[in-house]
Length: 160
Image (tube, rainbow, N blue to C red; front, side, top):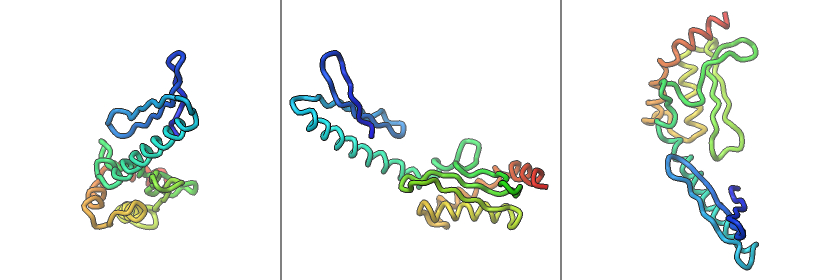
């Protein structure tokens, strides 16, 4: 909840503050008035409305390629790493707004080819987020595989 008490001297307000995206922050001040608890309920209701709009914005981002693809050509939350047993693979660590826990999955590049492991990670993302593995978004994400070439080589050297 992003409701706090704000004072400008001798007057008190409930301050409701939420920010998402590149838009200016949503900031509202609700005076205490005669009934402090009634004004608090108004502030909490406004905060819940803004929270729903913020959540809808974050969910809409999941279906856009520019949200997933970073400037270096790699995907947000997808990396090549070595697990505790020394096996290299693609790792996925993504926060999905409607889930309480992060999505954490890994696919080995030893037991399958690196390209198959990468495709499998994209399929996991699609299944968990809700986009079709053959959609335009999935195709754009699969095209980012060459950006991981040096990471794959480095992980294979470490694992050997």
